[in-house]
Length: 255
Image (tube, rainbow, N blue to C red):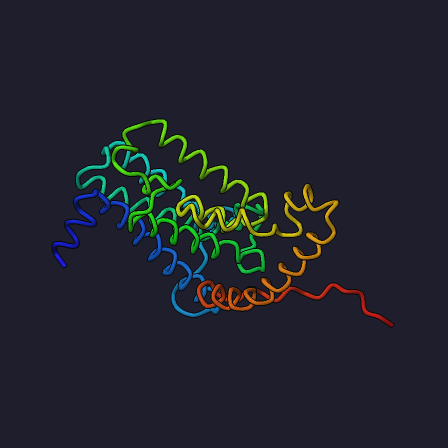
């Protein structure tokens, strides 16, 4: 175990990244536990309010910790004990900020609404991407190049440019998650770029406009995909982040 730790974490200089990821995940989980207890009225925790009764969201200390950790990491040049402390502070700050990602996106307190699910989704996505980089994957497939190719700027730029364009195609086809993971694992972006676009995506509006068969296939595939995965995805998000508040029915009553 000691040899594995030295070879895979210490020697490549990945200890700060590991600490940042651990602090990020742990902070998010603790925050969700605390907010769920506050929501249920259990335990000693309460919402924090400033002067004038303004509710202070935890994104505020999150921004402070992220700034301190980020600048501390730059100042420490990524080495020494200061870099490790900065990594932990940055991970904690990022966990607090992304836990309220939906609030930042909507500029509204949607934490316990249906729109608040975006926060959990972004946190899980971020943790997965950082985890992939921790185990050795690098953005745009640079890790697939050998030592000679890495020494040539042309090969690196060509590889990064090609993978970036493929990820853009996947994004244009309405497959945001596939495009994001494809930045780290290029084959994922290739699959997303080859397959049919989502029917509401910019790609479908541009290229399927005069292709009714392709448009119909896109709607059919989208329907079956959402039907298969929407339920499990919602259950996982609710297990992690809590069940959103029920949306009031505003449909006019029929007489």
